[in-house]
Length: 287
Image (cartoon, rainbow, N blue to C red):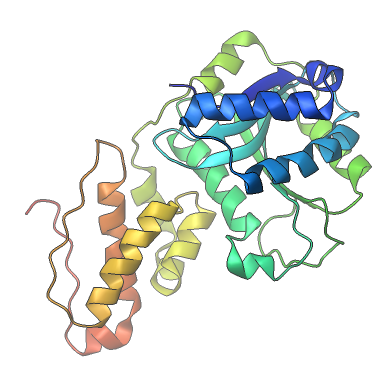
C-alpha cells in the first residue's frame, strides 16, 4: 500500500510550476486513498504550494519532501515531512503542519494544530519502525495568520505569515544535508511497532492524565484518532446517562482496541463525582 501522496527533492519541487505539483499531489492522493482529493483539500494545497516555494528556497536542493504521509496503522496523514541529515549528521525528519487559517476562531471548529503535530510526532517516536534511526522535529506554519493570533502552550517551533526566512532557517538548521537511501526507505516504508511505551507514558504522566487524559496523552504522542474519539465520546455519553449498553469494538491486531479501553478507563476515572456515587470503573485484561 502506498504511504504518501508525493515525494520529491527540493530541486524537483522548484523545477515544476505550482499547477504541476498540485496535479501530481492529487494523482498520488488518489493512488494512496482510492479517493479524489476534496475541494477543501485541493484549495488548501493550492494556497500552500506557493508559500512553500518562498520558504524552501533556503534549503539544500537534495532534501526530500514527502507530502500527505500516512502514519502506520492509522488514517491520519502528515501534511509535509522533510527528510535529511542535521548539521551534526543525524537522520532527521521535520514534521510540518501547514495551516492557511486567517481566523484564530477556526481552532474551535477544527483540531488545534499544536495538538495535531505533537500527536503525529509522538506516534512516530513511539510506534514507527524507524524511530530508533530518526530524530523527529515538529513545527507549525500558519502562513496566513499574523504572529501570536493563536495560542500555543507547548510547541516552540511556530511560524506565521510572511516568516519565510525564519522558517527557512529553522528547516535548514534541522535538515541541512541529504539523507542516505537506506534511511529514506526506512521512513517511507515504515510500519507500526507495538511497544510498552504507552503504559510507560501513562505511568510517568498519571497525575495529569487524571485531570485531562486526552490532552496529556497528546503531549506524549498517544493522542487518539478521530475515529477513536468518536467511539470514546459515544461510550462516555452512555456512562453519563447511566445506560446499560454493551459495545463490541472490532479491529485488526495493533489497530488500537486496547488503547481505546485504556482511554475509556482514564475518562471514567476523571469523573471523581461518579466515583463518589459508587460508579466504579474496571478494566479487565481478559474477560
